[in-house]
Amino acid sequence: MTQDHIFHRTLRAHWPKISHGRGIYLYDTEGREYIDACAGVHVVSIGHAVPEIVEAMADQASRVSFTYGRFLTQPQIDLADNIVAQTPAGLNRVFFISGGSEATEAAMKIARTYHVETGNPEKYRIISRWQSWHGNTIGAMSMSGRTAWRKDYGPYVQNFPHISPPIPYHCAYCQRHGTCTLQCADELERVIHQEGAHNIAAFIAEPILGTSAAGATPPPDYYPRIREICDRHNILMIVDEVVTGFGRTGIEFAIQHWGVTPDIICTGKGLSSGYTPIAATVTHERIYDAIYQQAKSFVHGHTYGGNPLSCAIALAVQHYVQQHDLVARCAQMGELMLAKLKPLEEFPIVGEVRGKGLLIGIEFVADKESHAPFDPALGVTARVVDKAFDQGVLVMPGAPGLIDGVAGDHIAISPPFTVTEEQAQQVVDVLAASIRSVAGELGY
Ligand SMILES: Cc1ncc(COP(=O)(O)O)c(C=O)c1O
Image 1 (cartoon, helix red, strand yellow):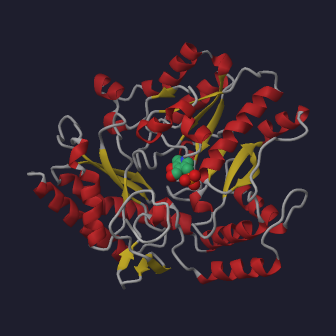
Image 2: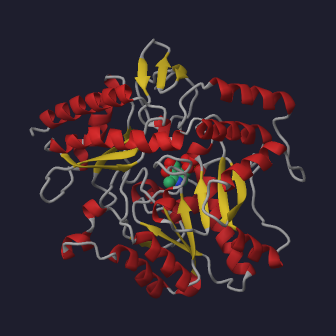
Image 3: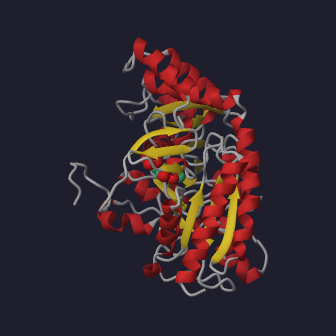
């Protein structure tokens, strides 16, 4: 047990303490340097301790940090304008909250309110995908398909349907037909028929997978087909861009890779690059207008939603990204880093290296032919992550059970967009050494 009074999320004998960060580096109080190659948890897009952001923070704090209720503030208005300039056309209404789970919960309530106000009060259920993750609050968890993280909370979880995730490396449909038949998208239509469109309010998905299978990217026709199915059944299309939003995949929002316009976008992490807790749920004008045709208010909100200090900080971060053209840089460094990591597929335990922009995943398999996973008891993910950590490189352990909720090992690499070629090479070298060492331990 540690001597502190923190309610820890896990027990460890030793917790290093971080004293400060600079750029893509973190430093602990014992003088160790770490490359933050996962941006904390896919958050820090512009690097740590950027002076312009610290100045903006102090400037706003010296004016006013908190307002509520009937007031607007200029940072809130300006940040909403900045976000809307980045989203697909029509997504014009920004609802501010403090984190990703609140963003997806807000989307759920917006979808519900839309259907209530447009004469379909029986529509309330949300379809999502197995293994997906939309957050830790009960509504968000009900929408999530990651059984490993919700099993103890089962009695609270809503009975919402799930469909197969579009992970090409594991697609049972593709393997059966030898080519992509989009049956994973058509599964949405089947589940809608099975459950009854009359009670389905929305479908929610991470456009490119984040923590459940970092970098897994559905085929080009996937989201157009999903959009068409949603429209046919009056089901709203929500994209969860908490990980992918604000440039992480080399474009402002990952759904723009498919040219599809969703009804609602949930954002979080990259909005403030971790400089303050803030998130935003962005809604199509059509949905907003329909709600306010009848309703007098949207009955939802959180105390810190849209506070001027967080809005000013996030605005400074977005200005910094735009002034330094960091989304284009993310695309360019992402391609470079993926090309450097791809050769790791030569290792006998690496099944696939995949990704878009600076959201890259490496999956480990026991058998490269069949794509069979390791026995989870071997702890392959943790072994690789720990070996990289020991060499000063932070990568994210992928959530357990990539394949079936139980088995499937993987890690994510998602450094700040400011990573240099030399730093990217250092990360690749450490990962190669770590994977080689784990393969040796496993007898490969
Ligand atoms: C895709 C996605 N949505 C929502 C969330 C929840 O965000 P938060 O932890 O900020 O509540 C996460 C968290 O990692 C996520 O990956």
